[in-house]
Length: 117
Image (cartoon, rainbow, N blue to C red; front, side):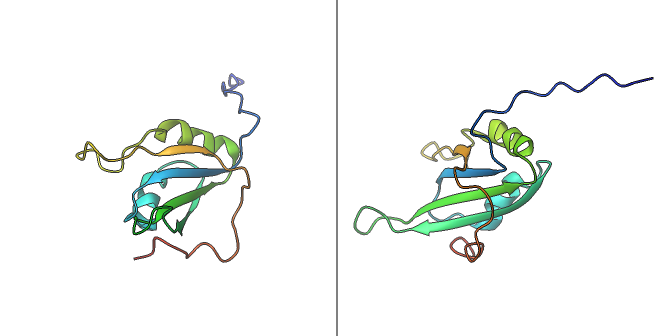
């Protein structure tokens, strides 16, 4: 007996296997971010990059990239975690803003930058 085909939602035109993350707290670690994304099928790795604040003496800006095996896997995580709060007990905690990365794929030399503490 043949199985019925699984229904899959069409992927957006900009879909890639890498998710770009904004809204991370300045003190978050790679490990914390990995714990959020690791349960999703196709998860590969998290990369965090620390940028200097645009405001003098301000906290650094942390941006992240999460790689998945396929754009469909990335789309599932993106949809599920859009607006995720890193600290649900802190009303001022920012929400994650996720989108498909415009330049997907691992970058040599950036996997260990920022976030390792």
